[in-house]
Amino acid sequence: MLIRVPRKNDPRPSEITPERIYRARREILKGTGAIAALSAVHASGLPSDWIESRGYAKHEPVPDLEITPSPYTTQYNNFYEFGTDKDDPMRYADEMTIDPWSVEVSGLVAKPGKFSLEDVLAGVDLEERIYRLRCVEAWSAVIPWVGFPVKKILDKYEPLGSAKYVKFTTHLNRDEMRGTRSFFSSIDFPYIEGLRLDEANHDLAIFAVGMYGDELLNQNGAPFRLVVPWKYGFKSIKSIVKIELMERQPPTTWNLSAPQEYGFYSNVNPEVDHPRWSQASERVLGSGLFARNQPTLMLNGYADQVASLYEGMNLRRN
Ligand code: MTE
Image (cartoon, rainbow, N blue to C red; front, side):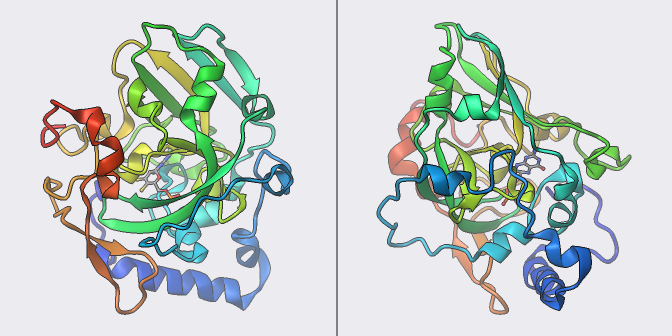
């Protein structure tokens, strides 16, 4: 997240999308060899027609939300395990083995254990949620996720009364994740994130297993990831292998890396600038040559639903 020292040939953030996406698309259109196959890779840890066979409930379309076309959200990613350039995840994330996949549920739960992904997802109804995604780097997208409330999974393993926080951990395999072998990485691995338990239990917080009606691509966090739409995107941790219920607030990757820049809560707030750039507006992915900027909304437009979680808290400081 713009922590690394800029290199001479780095484009300015405002230039990145159109150029990179243009190049990535052109390569795919060329239709040859490995690159052509990259974004079609569909190793999900779940059978490739899993979502279709399960079916999912669609909600009413949200009037003001124009869905970002999928090439933008699958070819311009943050997944530092595969590198820090926006097209690194698209290029290299398919090196990650995600089948089989298991998830360890531990800490303050009545039913801890290590479970196969199929077990974790058994009996959970899928639904489509069209959400804004606002990255702390000041770009945004609108993505139709397929998933289910986090609470549905947590409840299965029965959090104890003493549990106040949830910690999530991303898969780590240094052989398959070239970004984790870099000496210049600005963050440590595995990537870890956390939520207060009442945030995790809020209906808007989901685990996604798909987007655009298909299983997640690896670069977007296959086979399953967190999506917390009212927080900056870095809270939405990808490719989760561990869920731990805790009494104390867990450490989180970006907070450990730069505590003066990234807090635990990291709710989207246009009134509190990042120390190095404004958070008042955002560049909408996919808005092409005439890149569209729009004002950023308090709590990313979800204030009506989630502001009550933070009553009495100083949102500026948090
Ligand atoms: N999860 C892991 N494990 N590693 C990462 O580098 N990047 C985060 C988040 N989840 C990241 C991660 C950031 S900064 C953002 S903005 C979102 O993923 C981007 O999700 P997307 O690439 O699917 O749009």
